[in-house]
Image 1: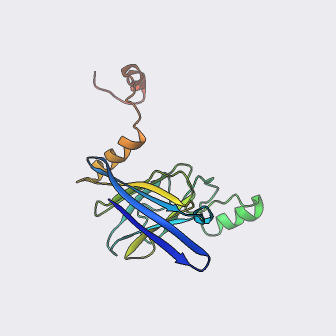
Image 2: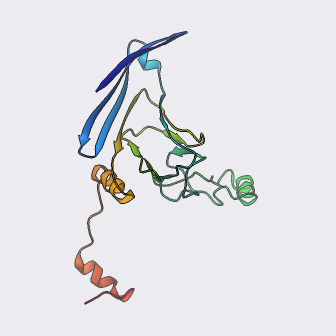
Image 3: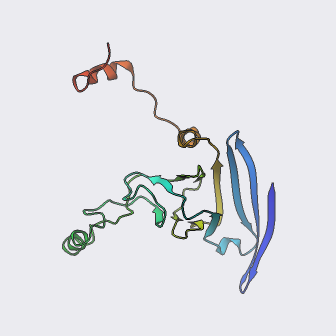
Length: 193
């Protein structure tokens, strides 16, 4: 399915197409593309979808400060964790003494543009550009991507594990360790013979 239209305003005349197609049995790919002479000047795309006040959101990378991202705006960007990660007083002191090395509550060394929700909604971006996932509005989610072309997938699953399996089917999974490596670890933990 393709939806086409145009965006017009002062100094702006751009056409767009939003295409949806099945990427897999449980994955729906979406693509937003801007076209026209002024499309090159557009450097941001937005995607909004409905949410509810009781929906909770999880993901977007490793070592985020909060387990539930609802009520937060999370940049999907590799950033140094810093010392303190936004802890009041300590972080500000370290920023003063060490030239800004205090970090923030949203710093992560392993961001991922993927989230899933308590209502089994799951979405990820295929883009590599900087993005911000904004869960502050109780009735919607807004994704801001710093490019004029947006591509991603909506995932279907009956459990959170199903959604994670769908995501890792796209990103890849770490292979199982070889048996000798597991046996060598027996000095640290008891493994069945």
